[in-house]
Image (cartoon, rainbow, N blue to C red; front, side, top):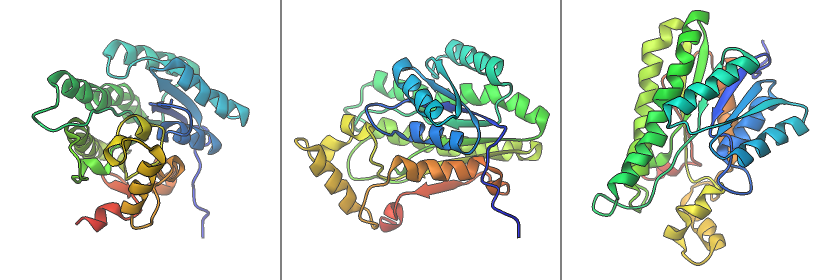
Length: 269
């Protein structure tokens, strides 16, 4: 029996959204470190230079290989510049990890049009811009992997209105399916990781107030009680799923969603 090929040695991974919204482990930061631990050269891209640099420093502290790239993945010129710099440093990109996501709570009547458009630009338009940067070379080489991050909010209504985030994360799922089907014959795989209630720095800035406006600890406890496994997930839970999909261990997996939610969505079916 062959050993599980869970390695990215010799490969370059571009992580769009490799920083963190605050102190601690975001999904993008944990994924970046995980990729590096599997031997990849990691391009840590984020519009927050200090946060991206912190991720890069964490990787280098473990003797991993990483470089920081700063820009807004919703802006075409920034994307072109960052990928040109990444190719200059490391050559062609073997894995694109698309990890960005913003959104404000609110339904159709209280979501500002500008906020909705901003969520679409960051969450969906950026996937178009970044995938266009990697697909041509992947086609030439006959291999490549794209891993996108959606959310269970793109599958289910989770009890409070979060329209701009939910519908754009749903779009990410189908966008990924479209890439997978169109480019499978060229040896390119595309899969979407769908996290559930994950304890990352982002919750303090967005959804926690929906559960407890006065106490982050109470909000965490309330979110954990919703999950059949009785805990929120960690950024590492998601990062490990991403590592599987990015590696040759998932060589026959494409066009699908890997739900990492502790059983949450099954509970509400």
